[in-house]
Image (cartoon, rainbow, N blue to C red; front, side, top):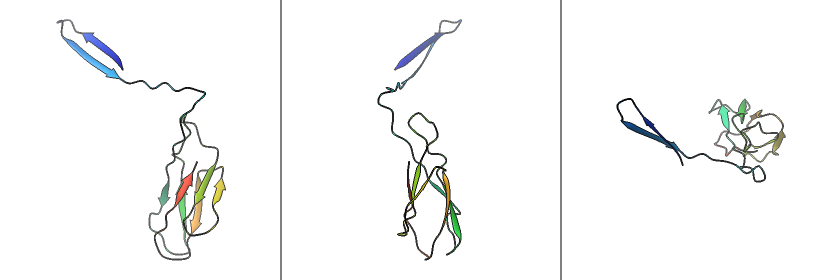
Length: 100
């Protein structure tokens, strides 16, 4: 950890520290995926907005490809954009996922 010690005019000390992460550019960190839906509860046949825009690569740069699985047996959707819409045919809870 990096440590800093400061001394005030009265001779009193205070200390602060942190752990600094340094990444190897030859071995980047894995991407981070986050998925939100709007509205969280929707009616049959009405589209749900799925938003993965808070996802990023290991360098916190935008993701270049998103693969959405809507959990209802329909084909996965690959998109260069983080927002897609999908309606459902049946009322139930679906396990939706995104891979970045």
